Image (cartoon, rainbow, N blue to C red; front, side, top):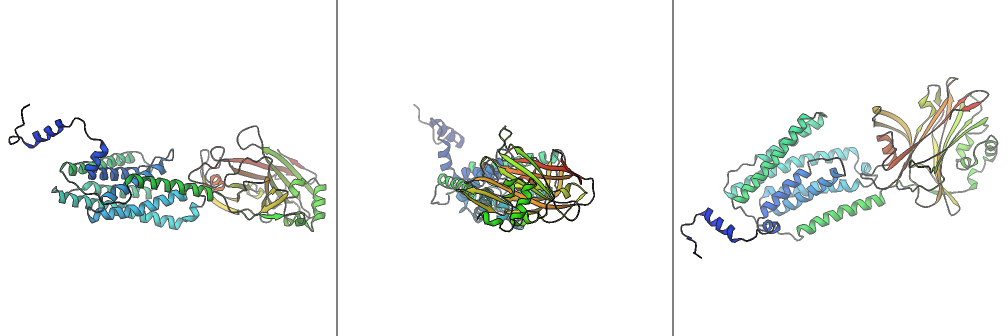
Length: 490
């Protein structure tokens, strides 16, 4: 074999000789160890892409930013000692990562809107946006400093273009732009910007620029695994500890109805269901003193589109003496079988005065929830009972703003005969109107939901909850009251 002519060989021939002497190229991880600049910038640019692109399916709008932020952390961690600008990028990334991951963990609880109320959310979102612009500015200055150190022309316009691109996106969000063509143009320009930054990274690598990665105590793989474990553990604890309302359960007994026994006997004689009467508070029983007649309507409902009907809803109307057309309305629910209670339940009440101009409110809404365990009855007030103004979006009626009465609560995992009721008084404004009162019960069927949502929030966001984690049962007490009779319409 003839020895090569070393003196007559130019640089290209020398590189070709080296390549021909290598039987098999080294693995990518080995190349990354030899060229840490390439690996770090690849992670940074991939992370920027993943934290920007939003895909609203399969939870990718949460998974991709989480992965992208981890890649940015690892990338800037390796370059943090290269110059002060890249060091600032690392510090900003740490803050943004804490903000992102804390938000992801809080989303696993029903309290995320309480933990971060609207003013705090707006403030943190604004700070995060400003830090994003600051990060791209530091990235631009950091790349320029590296180019100067490598003896290359100082140009890193891609980072500046990123700042401009984010500014345009922010302005479009403010004006609520919904067009398609401009969004396609922005997507194409974003891909071009990242490609420009990637070419710049390759130029530095091809120019022979080498860095010494900043020393770390925790290896990259271990750090990435620790972030993943922290997120999963945090979300699991959030789901375990933050999926239910804290209810004030207290033991009750027969003595609770002391002093209203005569009213109870009168109501039973008129046909008031005993299983409903036993659950009423003393105040609600006393409100029926002197009752003239009782109208009752009972329905059993399924909560999973099956033949099984474990939810019994009883509507009761009690005509009161005095002013003509005064009624006390009761909506009572009873779970005859335990369907599994995984989080929150809610009731949306459409009282008669909301549905007809022939009726007016004659008082406030009251009620409570109950269950039995080991022969003892426990009761609690609703966690929330009152009016809520909300905007819902329906495929049939579009966006609608409403103000309705809601009751929100959670049931315990143990016990039986879980039940509750709502009651309110109404008075007639005009004769000839039906009494139409609706009771919309939303049941949470599974714990598998992310981000976590309460049954009341689900009902307010979408009027039709017949799929997914929640199921809404609608029941109505409807009758036409006259002086002689009260004929049910259902």
